[in-house]
Length: 408
Image (cartoon, rainbow, N blue to C red; front, top):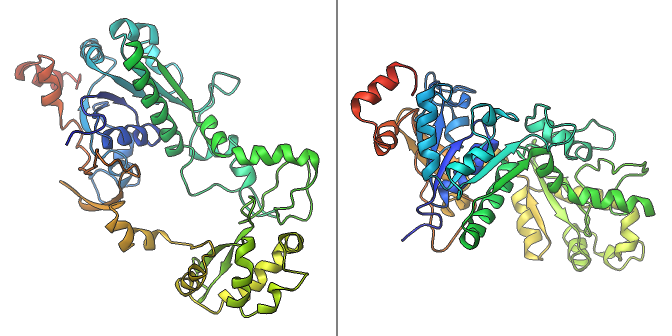
C-alpha cells in the first residue's frame, strides 16, 4: 500500500520543536524526510538527557521516521551539495532566526531559480512587523499570542499551558500550509513560499477569546464565573467559556489529578440532580433552567463536587456517562502513557532505539485509511550520509575527505 506523501522529498533544516513537529508529521504521512544537521547535530540531541551520551527523548520523540545527514552550510562544498539537494526536493522546511537562510546565500529568489517547483516553508516567532526580530520560545509565543493572559484563575498570575501550542501548534499549522501548497502545485506546476509565525498560530488557537473580547463591548460575559469585568477578557479558571458551563470538580481520594471535568447541558440537569442525591433541584425554579443556574455557577459546581468528592473519578465517569452527561477525568501523564485504550488505538507506541533501548512516544494523530503509519526509530546523527551523498555522486573517498574536513 502506498502512503499519502510517498515520493515527496523533504529537506528538513529544522531544530528544537516547532519545525521537527511539522516534518515528523510529513514523514508519518509518507514523505521522505531528510534532516540536515550541522556536524554537531540538532541541539536537542543533548538537551534534557536522561541517559548519558545518548540522544535525548526531546530529540527522539520529535524525529521518528526521518533520515539524518550532516552538512556544514558555511563551507563552499557544503553549499554545493545543498544546491544539488534543493534541485531534487519538493519541500524545504526551516525554523532558523529571521534571515539566516538568506545569509547562507539561499534567498527565496535563489531557491526558485534552482527549483521552481520547490515549496519553501519557514517558521518564525513573529510576522514581519515590529516584533519580527524578537526571539521566540514556546512560552513567549503563548505570552504574546493571547494564551497566558486568559489562562489561570481570576486572582492569580497569567499561566502557561502544558500543551505546546506555541511550538507544536505552529508545526501543525505549517503542515496545513505545506499540504495546501503541494496540492496547488498539481494545478500550477509552481512551488511557493509558506510562512507561519508562532504568535499567529497561538492567536488562531485563542480566537474564541477574541470573540469574547468583542462581546465585552455589549456587557459582561454571563458564561464566565467572574464577578467583575474590566476592559479585557479575564482569566476564568476552568470555566468552559462556551455555551455550556463546565468545571473541574474534585474526586476521592483527593490527589493532585483526582478531578473530573463536568459540563452541564440543559437535558443533563435532571439526571445529574438525581446522581448527586439532590433530585428536588430538577424542578426547583431556582435551579431548573439554564437562566436560573447561570448567575450561580460556583454554587452549582460546589453541589456537584459535594458528591464527586466522595467517589473516585472513574466511578464518577461511569455514573455520568450512563446518563450521557459530558465529562472527562483529568488524566495524568503517567495514566496517559500507561493507558490501555490509547495503546490499543496505536496513539501511544513503544519504539526501539539502537542506543537507548525502548522508549514510548505519541504516534501520528492523523489516521488515513489508505496511508497507515508505522512509527520507526529516529536517526542517529549522520546515519544516512552514505546513502544521500552517494545518490549525489559523492564516492567513498570524497565522503571520507568531507568528513575529515568538517564539511559533513
